[in-house]
Length: 638
Image (cartoon, rainbow, N blue to C red; front, top):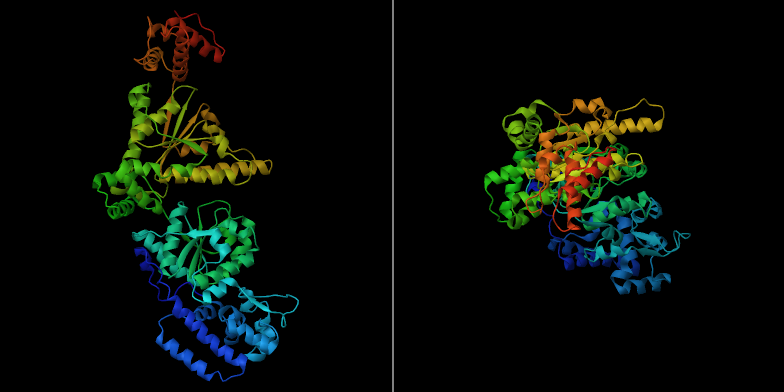
């Protein structure tokens, strides 16, 4: 069985070509009934020659493909097995066949025994479980203990196919869904599709890359180029039945339904992959596999041919986005398309919805919205509003932070237009460390940068990311990094020393795995194409290898008196009613920016419960409470 003829043009996938429309159901059914007439002649003891001539004439005059031809060629039936299948299905196709069988053999159902007696070219191995009739579940034995004399029951799906009905196997239809291919492909995706179509002749192919949904779209394009309909399957299809039986069902449906299966193996257990790989390699059926860049060895366990699906450069992203906007008939200035293509690396299936949504919310906002759902519960996606004028830091630190924002804003020009990106095989992104005491503004600075770049801030929830089970932490981190890269998000790891800590001496398996986890983080951080911000109160606790991969390290000092006075001013908005408040006296208390913001908020609540006007008494009480959190005591502020 093959996925496509050897002369299939892989380039057709770039245009999103669909399989040929199915032949006329009536003509296909007529071919089946005409061939059944030849088998009935053997059953009734009449000369089969006239029926054979009528069949030949019908074949010459029909443009339809006989359903039995598809089954025989696709699943390897001999002429005797082909006729046996027709005899078994005869009572379902033509009611008189059941009566004819009953008159001659006393039963309205055919058996292997009746086929061996009646049909020409009989051979015994057609009866065995290894023969295609039983192997592909085209027929089953009503009595498993009576192989030759037991009635043959045809599979319902096979009967539907013989009469020309396009009805998928019920179990596989429930476990799968139609998969759309990209309508337009640029050079890199088109090369991937051509590579897949070429390699699949030797067996299944695994498409692997950082954007699984793009890999699925290209797998679908390869299926269309091969003339089969792509359908997406999850790994749970192997949960309810033995893997070999499920594979046989998949291959059979590939023949009957002209389906190309795209199997998402991201949730496939390694043990199942070891069983599945050899079974798929032993077929040449249209089974394509899709995976992300997971570190758990599923690709190696499958042992199939691997085609890498890379991320696209800004130029190709711009061309695809322009094409999608054109198809949606949405006009956007070229400069705006260039800006969005440089910031957002959307998966191929996102381009169409983004173009449609652009008419309502604008291109930039439409691009921002698409990847947010991919983060799930692993982080909080925040749309920030804080500006540079609200960030109180010494000029040196502010200059560092503005330069950090500039590296993101001008990345496409520097790395692509000016060619500096070609000089390094590392990722295109930037990793920065914000180090300093609690409340000194590290997280707030990340919010300011995200707002300045007009990007979302992904605030990583370490309690949701770190998992006790082997490999789960890496999977969740990979999902976060990929979603952030797709959406141009700023990735924030607060208290990063909990995740990026120093590797330790290996004393047991737990130490070994912890070191592997840190090693994976090092590689993923280096390959990340966006902006990742790590904050820490304990810089010395970080693994030194992380420091070498950081583009920027910003030290956040405790604020001096002048800075504290400005912070108090920013924390007490103009709309807040206040009486005789001295910012200079408030600045005498040695508080960080975070503590000042907390004290201002607490004082406002105190005032709301006490007349509605903030006084120095309210502020002084709030300051004392903030100092008490760190075990300090201050004289009353009045």
